[in-house]
Length: 427
Image (tube, rainbow, N blue to C red; front, side):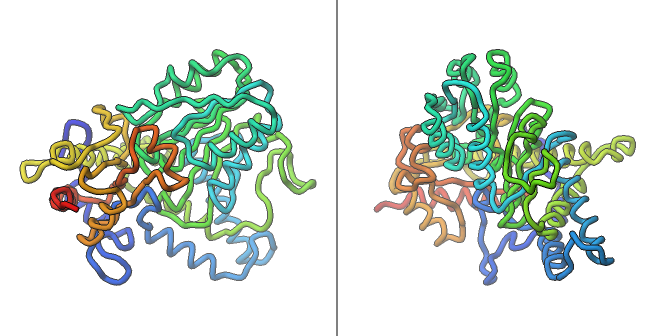
């Protein structure tokens, strides 16, 4: 079904998609529920989990020379290629680690050591892993920290707000690809282009953790120096983080074994199972593609098309979530609910939304939703992960809703009826 902003998967397609994930409509204990907390860690792709378990059970070391070791080395090499498919990266280096936050903090440190300039620019919406790191290293190296404020209506950071803070002495620009509070997608391509027109030598860092499961990444094409994401928020496995670094960053001094090439960022024996799981994520997205045979030989083209179909379905779900259907009212039209950061143009939003229940705190609302078999998450001002962001929207906290492309229109309608019931409660 085509909506104003998207196109839903067919019922048959959705049925097949849902079979590929664990715990889509019930939890591990067999209890029925709506899982709307994918921004905290998405539903798990069965093939990714199974590939991880199969490979991780093997004692063979991919750096050795026996038959199975060589097979594992091939799995790793395919994983590296698939990581580049996700980043659309033909050059540069891929940096792997325990978490995306760990990688972000390390890259901020490295760039801060090598950058030239008297100030750094970040945004009020950044994840603490980048915001806190750039704050710490700006202070360490005596640089002024400039913070771009959010657009309270759209939930994003306007291009000109960021560019107005950049000058020829800006050492580093740190701007996330999409907000983990509002779902607003930043215009990274324009931001990078205008920033480099002012200072060609500026280092640019982008956190893509929240956007990666919803849209394509293009750091190399746009001219970004470092971009990260977390596979566990992209249908995959916890305990693994990925970051692209550009050619000019790849050879900067960083922790590595002295016998390895200057642009090598892998340390220690790799966990081959993580590489296998990433390959399964890419294979899954490519399986959703609907393009002709001539294009089908290019894996990145398949991946892009698959991600666009995911985005199309999710925009349609977001439209239903906000506007409702003939059967039920959308969040914009339910008494007792306020949609914050509500950009009208859904083409600029991922399937993440923040709402307030006027009769209760966000924490209480999350409790009431769970009583009714809905899992959401409170982004409260009492949390160090949320305080800076929600307060910039004049809020004490929001209920963050983050469905996924596996969800059906009927599940969105079910949620809207539950939200209306909760909104009518008095405390």
